[in-house]
Each structure stands twice: as structure tokens, then as C-alpha cells.
Image (cartoon, rainbow, N blue to C red):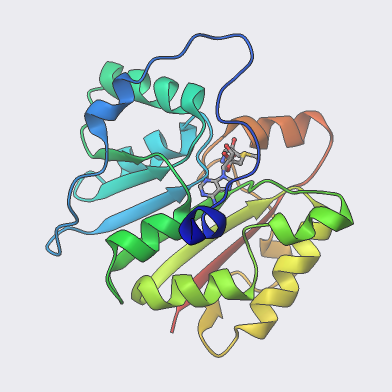
Length: 212
Ligand SMILES: C[S@@+](CC[C@H](N)C(=O)[O-])C[C@H]1O[C@@H](n2cnc3c(N)ncnc32)[C@H](O)[C@@H]1O
């Protein structure tokens, strides 16, 4: 019961219209192998980022951590079509994935692209990125490993900036100068929410941090 409360996830698990299947369970997370480098794509939605990261890192395993069934089905069929075999799926909350499957200093890289912004002030506490989560990522990442974060929400950007300041002893912010904050889609994944941001005339913020 206690864990159900701790690992609660807000938002949708299934779309309203589409019928999804659970074929994606064929590539569900296997036992963690300490010889393998793992990259975690948190809240990957339809998995465009997972595909791109997996293609660029074919010597590593990319774990897509997401609960949204339609997104996971879509990721599974794209990976099949493109014969990508270094993706594993964890259907659930990233807090649980980290706490129950990883050891200290073991993860190679983390991606968090366009996390749910929860724009209402009373919902800010639902946001994933805060000091507690940075502390957790710090525990599980290897030294020198990176975290990649993007958001198109102004208030979330402020919260992220404040958090980066509060963890400056633990992480080096590699694109600290404001001129490097733009989301460069020539090198970064064009996800559904990235495209949505552009359509709405927003200029997403991107931050890359390295564990000290
Ligand atoms: C706004 S969507 C962004 C999807 C995708 N990254 C993109 O850029 O299109 C945020 C996703 O994060 C997932 N999510 C939210 N909290 C999560 C958590 N604690 N662990 C794993 N996934 C989470 C949600 O299910 C949702 O699909």
C-alpha cells in the first residue's frame, strides 16, 4: 500500500480511441546486467526519442520508462520495423524503476524530454523534476554521466533553473550560457511534444548536466 502511494502516476494510461495491444511486453525490461551501459528515456510518450537514442547508441540498452500504453505499442512497432533490438520497456514510474532495479553509480545517461508541465500552481508538486529527483538521479548515475532535460513551460523552466542552482555541487551544467539553451532539433529528437511546442510558437528550453 505504501509503495502504491509513493509510485503513484498522474495522467493517462490509455488513449480514448485507439485500441492498443500489449505486444510491447515482448521487449520488457530484463534483469539489469552490470556489464551493459543503460540509458533511460523517462516519459518517452510515443517513443520517437527512444528510437533516435537507441540508433545512436547501438552498443547500449535504452530503457523506455513510460506508462502510456498507446505510446508503448507505437514504440514497439517502430522498433520492429526498423529492426532495432537495443530497446527495453519499463511500464511504470521511473522512481520505482530506479529504486527497484538499479544500483548506485550504474546508469550511463538519462533523458527527460518535455515532462508533464502541470501548469496549475496547486499541481506543481506533481512535477517530476525537483531537488529530490535530482538527488535520486545523482545516486544512480555513473560519475561523468549526463542528464538531458527539455521543457516548453516557462514556469517549469524557472523551477528547473532553481533546482540546477541547488544541485550545483553535484552536477556540472554543460550548456550554462543562455545562448545554448535552445532545443536544437538537428541533434535532439523531434518528439510529439517538441512539435506541439513549435506549433504553439514556443521556444523549448534544453539543459544538459554532467554528474560530478
Ligand atoms: C508530456 S509527455 C511527453 C512525451 C514525450 N517525451 C514527448 O516529448 O513527446 C510526458 C510523459 O511522461 C510520462 N510520465 C510522467 N511521469 C512519469 C514518471 N514518473 N515515470 C515515467 N513516465 C512518466 C507520461 O505518461 C507522459 O507520457
